Length: 402
Image 1 (cartoon, rainbow, N blue to C red):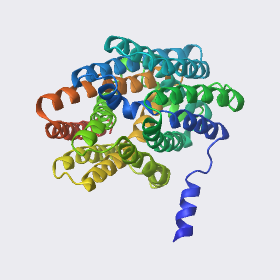
Image 2: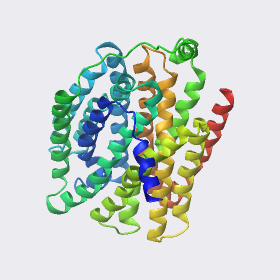
Image 3: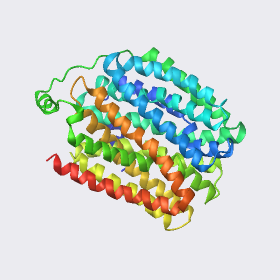
Image 4: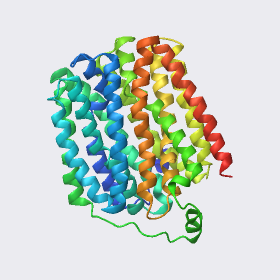
């Protein structure tokens, strides 16, 4: 039984190109230092003494920067190439993250986080495009899953180490580590990963399928899909904005305890996501149906928070949203990549990234205002209800593509 499990886990990684493995290592180094985001709302309320409404505006500025950066990153990936965008984005982001700790005013932080996220999220569409260059078409979902595995392994370390850094050094240490790891990721990238061009589609069947789409702006099913992605991101981002406040204010958890609980997300993904995706691909299960079920798991993760104040409910909620994330995110990204015609990958993947950026703009602000006016319970009910709406849209999309 144990040997069979190990073999299954091993086989799920077979066939991936060396470049994808290097990209995963670079992503891990970068994400292991991403400690600021899980503690952003705590930092803003505890150290900068901002109100919940002000924190909401900072997170909105965060999202606006992410939106602009995703759009610019997609356009540049189609013009100067994904590799140059990735390198320049990482280096500048490192400098900006280090600089953020020296800004102490509400207005200054609004501008600082906007500029930082504009540059930082130029990286996302470029990285997604790079997977189309470095991986074979049949391996793209697993290649993406490996990158997500690296992200979540880094995220497993990040919140826990971040909690320790806050306890012993203070919040300023988070900005130093985040900035330095961005720059370290570039050094590794320049050493081991060479620039590569995307090859034209060689499969005639795939070419016919994508030739039907003349413009991303006329691709109506893709726009339904983007609304689903927005709602998924809207719910998921509560994990990094309102959820840490809920853990501290309602359950009285320390930063270290919050870091441990949030690390559970990355640890579970590290253990189970790759074999799970491999199993789904082997069984040729319907990807859109899987995304739909993931949205129900998102909804349940919020609804159950209103059933009890037990720590077990917090763990259960984290597990539900984690499994929803494992089932949903890899296949939404895969859908966007497969839907994009050759030469327009940047545009499609930019819009995919921008859907998450729009979620950044509204998720934190809506969540913070709702908590401030009505309390956490109403916010969790609202987020769960959005999951049900997104589930319905996904079923509609599935039927429209038959």
